[in-house]
Length: 304
Image (cartoon, rainbow, N blue to C red; front, side):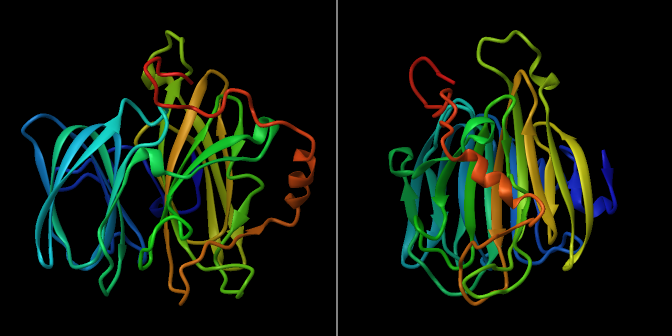
């Protein structure tokens, strides 16, 4: 891995705190608008979410969880049925507004996307069946996007969250793009977190810890950044500014990432600018088909 600033890329466990495998929040140097927490829970384990100054989306990565959430006018318990892995299609998720505290129990691996926020929204349970699934790109740039936390799907204060599955040998977050300037109608300012998972393709007998992908960022006028990393399950990249992409799934291994975005602009919108040197690549998708391996779905056969 090469990076011009070690603040922006973290290996699994580097950010461990208070029972969480990884925590990114307002105490992370250089970070203001987004956060993430990742943990593995066993039966009997629990983790508390006590900060009332953030809104959250709880995302089961693998396994099933129960969330007791407390906010006006009382207390509720929501079961998240989850999934076997991030490569088995969408999961159900739970949105909790600022002003909420919660206790998380269950068995499996879970992520909590966060953003500092004020005001109150209704809490919202989104079942997997209601998650908008988008097949984006074409050919070797085909990927699958679960848009459960985007402005079109969820009424949140600041958070924009989605997850992306990139089949082996495909490219995503491509062409490289940025969102670090406020240009109304064209580009919005958004910090972004990439949380990665990787796995051998279905039917492979390769070791799970051998799976990897690649991820890059580079500088824009808004700031200098340089990440060129081999990524594995649990790794986290922080993108405060700059062009980011591609994210590439190596042959033999599928790549997943959870994107968490929020920013200082008055409108909650996700507008990007492609790197002009590479924007032409989008035109090459015309006439190409979506990768026939997609969509990856959660069914009894665990197809992917």
